[in-house]
Amino acid sequence: MTKRIFTVGIITSIAMAMIEMIYEGLFGVGFWSAPVFIAAVLLRNLQAVALPVPFGVVPVVVGLMGHMMNSIIFTFVFMVFIAKRFTSRATAITGGIVYALMIFFIMWFLVLPAIDPVMLNLNPYVFAFAHIVWGTVLGLMARIAVTSKSA
Image 1: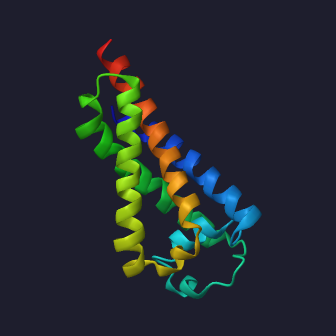
Image 2: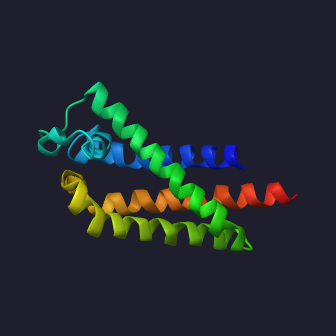
């Protein structure tokens, strides 16, 4: 189960990051903005980073690590405590989307303003949509993992 959680967490994080980074690169505050803004939790000088956000090896690596770590943690919670309750692929996907939107709203309105306000420069609608994509992939993959484990 540990390998499955890790794999699902990484895949969901990549799906979410692709949506966010492509949008921000084309229409927003820069392709590298999401990982750099995530890194700003630890690298506090990035709270005042220039827009559009430039590439920096350390901020991008730290941000991607933070993003993937959070995805694995939230995937663990979903797969261990929630996913086994769903009886179909559709309910698992719906559950994944609801779970992802709960994470989005808690992060956007409570956590980010307190610990990482620069992250609020991202487009909130695209950020919410990226969470929906994350939840969709999570629900689908968690259901497959749960059913293949019991088969």
